[in-house]
Image (cartoon, rainbow, N blue to C red):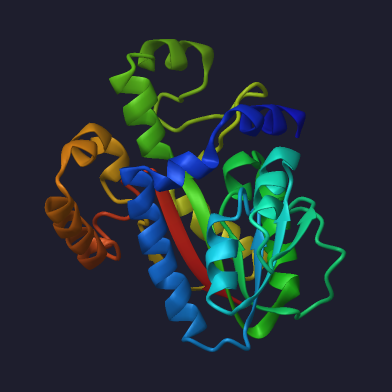
Length: 256
C-alpha cells in the first residue's frame, strides 16, 4: 500500500481527469452512473477509491447522498478541501467493515482493481462491494486492460523483448504483474472469472475511454467542435462488443 501512496502523492489525478482523454472517460462514466441512478436523489452512493473526489463531489453537488473511501491521504486531503457534503474516510476496498450490509444503492469501484494483483484480492474487493450494496443496487467496476498495456508499454515504448525476458509478459502476451509494479491488467475473460467467483451478474460492460488513450496527442490538437464530435462517436460505440477490451479501461456494471 505504501507504494500506491507514494505514487499518488506524486501523480496528479485531478489533472488527469481534466485532460482531453480524461474527459472522455469522465463523461462516459458519468453517463452510465446517471443511467443507474435514474435521477432518484434518494439513492445513496458509495465511491470506493474516490481519489480526489472528481465523481463523488460532482454527484454530491447534484444532490445525492455520497460517501467516499480513499486510501491515499493526499488525495483524501484534496477531496475534503473541496468543502462538499461528501462524507469522506480513509480506508481501502478490502475492508468496508465500517458499513453495514445492504447500505448503498450505487457503489463505484473505479480505482482499487487497478492495484489489486491477486485473484483473491480482486474477488474480496468485489465481495465487500457486493455486501454493502442493496439487493436492488448496482456496482460499477473499472479495470485496466491487458492489451492496452502490451501495445503501449510493450510495443510503443519498445519494452516488449525486455518484458518477455523478465516474465512481465508471457509468450501469449498476457501481462504478469511483479512485486514492484503498481498496476494489474486484465482481460474480459479474467473479469468474467472474478464475477463468477464473487457471485455477481452483469447488466452491461462498456469501454469508458475507447481509443482515447491511444490518441492523446490527436485529441489535444482537436478544436472544441471536433472534440464534441469525437465524444458523440465514442458514446455511440462504447458498448460495442467488438471494441470493448481494446481501450485502456473497461467499466463493468454488475448486480447481486
